[in-house]
Length: 374
Ligand code: UD1
Image (cartoon, rainbow, N blue to C red; front, side, top):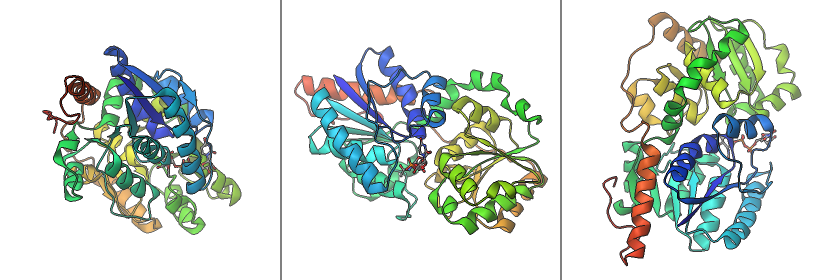
């Protein structure tokens, strides 16, 4: 059995890491393809190093572009690659453009697709990721869901239960497997900060970065927060900062810095009093690390974190952001229960399903025949 794994952007690397480790442990042949959607050292190679992911077997160099250009180029190059490599299965993770391109190229070649992180829905079709999620889930054979609500979303969309596997959250597994290294890192010391005496912020979604007045409101809220706010910049956000001279607004409590590596980011998060973000993965990581999260978006697909009481949504308005921060600072950190199956066994569950399915094929049974993770 040869499994091709497709990654392209920062959060993909985090999600593929434990799966590659587990496949290597179980001596399953895999072929790792990096589309090159993210290419800067600080958002690509650094993640491979921190997470000890072996270098990709193929790098496609797709790069940046409009959604059509980026997805289209990845589709063309992935199709050529699959024809050459002839995998028995293609694994795609998350919801970025490379995820959609990988699933589509494989499905058209009649190669079964496994989607890790299936079933998340923000119900906001203006988000490119939402389009990617819906399309991938409807062309994949194996849908590996992180939460019970994701399972329910898939069922509501009419997907047959035999394709859905409730395996848990792979991002949580990556975090738990790196916890010792994260604890040792103490990145906050580089900023002369004390644990729990600062907030961490990440903002990179086009809905927040590409509208300059919105971005200014966010930056102004961070600058006026009642505690220091460390704000590592994604390349897109950094470009907007430079283009619109936002560094001048970055005063008061705001500390602007370069994008962090995986371990630096998680070290900063672990010691933060709270986190402000529009990222999907950070909402989950904060939940696992018991750091309260304020999500600066109108919707989230990570509703398990909201249901747990670990996360709340806030509009990109200065006053609303400041009120949310002040409430957490004044009321203290609430306690919550981490969602079920956000543990260290997620990659094992996934590999168990895939191995069994392929042994079914070898013994003449159907690929999708029952599993305890259904
Ligand atoms: C992508 C994902 C998003 C994910 C994010 C994580 C899609 C639709 N979006 O968004 O879901 O949360 O990755 O970071 O797939 N750039 C660089 N260097 C790089 C990569 C990008 O400078 O290595 C700049 C380019 O100007 C580029 C812009 O960032 O145009 C956006 O990159 P892109 O990959 O298109 O989307 P992200 O915003 O990173």
